[in-house]
Image (cartoon, rainbow, N blue to C red):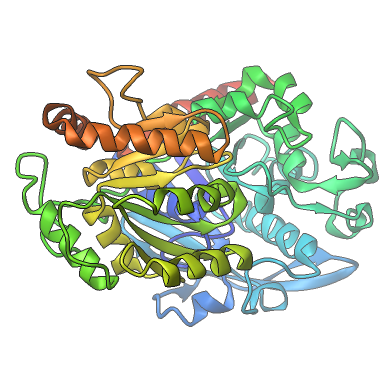
Length: 483
């Protein structure tokens, strides 16, 4: 008998996306449904969703949610855009008919309204979940409302809550004065509740009130219990260590599969790697680099930010560019890295192919055509790029942190199982050292072929991750019943 699960997130592919959360919230429900569970998702209906041409229809009548001493009108639309999964679009024009998803002055009220609206809607439906799976700060109040406002509600009181942290750095911290207007009793503004250095912290609410807490890799679940990675919540996370688990994200192999990828120049698989070279030449030509298949090519698809290691990469690149290497760089982010990388591309036009922005087809070609994939992150809760690159036989060079440490086995650590290279010190010197070791391995044919075969044999499918989430849902239900 399958579980009934409602996954709530502020963004979900294919409706709305700014980052990896949307990929998880779109792919995990599909994998759960394929395993026989009844999964539904809920997200706000942003202005972008309205213009995305995704079919939806109104479900039931509009209802009111009390916010700041006024009643806000909310309607719900239903869509089948995710195969096998029902999606609820929470339509509240007052808060979500805007261009931006986040960064608005009233974000506290916006996402509190979303959480309240979902629960108000669910309590009136025949279909009710056994577990609500909330994600990141935007849904951090959902476990709070479940335990407090609706704790004794006969329709909602039996629902367990799993709360997943995708990136602890973004916590939803607001002035404490917002709480009364969003239905949070002042008694919850304590060190044991939502209080956080004199302000209200929505993510902390989820961490405190959820039956179970998870994050997106096993190593990151341990790292965030330390001051270095804990973002001033390490004490709370350490206190809840018995309820804290790590489940790595998966890769949607329907989209990211070199054997069937229509966005690359030539398809290939682990049994026939020869066509990979055609992708390398196609990538070089696309970026205006000399078409030289023998030159080692390093790829990067990333947000251009210090968290992603761009500071140490920027320091390392001038040294690396003294060698006969090429770099394919795609991303957008902080202006300082735009300027620095643009200068290097102008200075080394035969060695640096830079695209500022995002281009999905080019991203696929970088994964397929590069020899190495760079992820020198300062911290990385899970990471998707390294898992995609492995599937395309592009060897990752990563910092040994978070999900990167969980998925990349360094050649020096285990030559038989190795699938890439990693370094521990957060420095340009350590990054250059890992790159140098990669270049040496590339020259040793038997070592290189073993690396490629190990990389492409890795299984990071969502089906595996979904099974781990099912175990967490069952454990959350058990904890909830005992509470």
